[in-house]
Length: 331
Image 1 (spheres, rainbow, N blue to C red):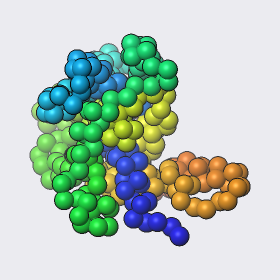
Image 2 (cartoon, rainbow, N blue to C red):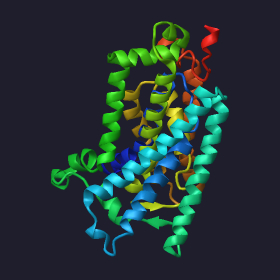
Image 3 (tube, rainbow, N blue to C red):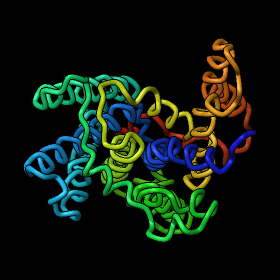
Image 4 (cartoon, helix red, strand yellow):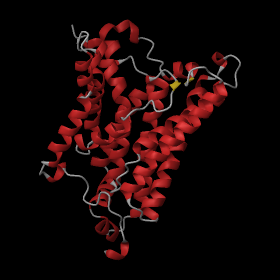
């Protein structure tokens, strides 16, 4: 039988990195910046947090003696700083220097993956481990700590309360982003910048400031997705090239959710479920069928992209100036 109580928590755990990535990219794209460097940003955010955690955890002979607050704050701050630097680099190239956004984003993805693998490999050599991975078990336990009464509430606790704080933080960030975008003056200005920067500029809105702030904020949120994957989902184990294509799925999720952060919450869980559904559908000894089930998230992504191109409603379209540099002299 299909074990739904076991399936949902794992689907959520798979979907949280996608939720962080898609929320960050939605905020970025609302300003008119198309950041295809999200996969690289997630790598840099993850390895930055791993470096901070590695240095702190290995400064103790007994990792259980760590200060719990510092053990969580240090990787969080390192992750946010690393992701922020990636956002600043992207903005400098595309907003200040007006470089092509597509090329810049792809270059940042390549750079981010290489950056993560280089420093990850260096840390692995420092540990002298026989396996090509780093295990930060003590820090991971703190990130994966659940509510104290979760185990006593049966299936409800397993489905809704069995996650670390970063999972709930991802949902809160998505809801706050939706509120700001749709219900505040800041959100109105941001949408104006993404739709028609010339008109927004004429109205006195600082285009450069909005693009810088939202893109950097989006990168910081996406970077948390990488940190979650390592510290929570992977139990504190870093392995080079372990992220797979989650960053690209997060970008596809932006189109699937028609640029609405609140829709990303159920959509990311759906994609997370598709990612692991092959583990729950009996296939016997037929491995070929299992490989077909592994294709489901990518097939759904293709179908979503096809149907999204057929949408004619204006509210379902991307920001009008998405991917286009703004020249004030062309107003």
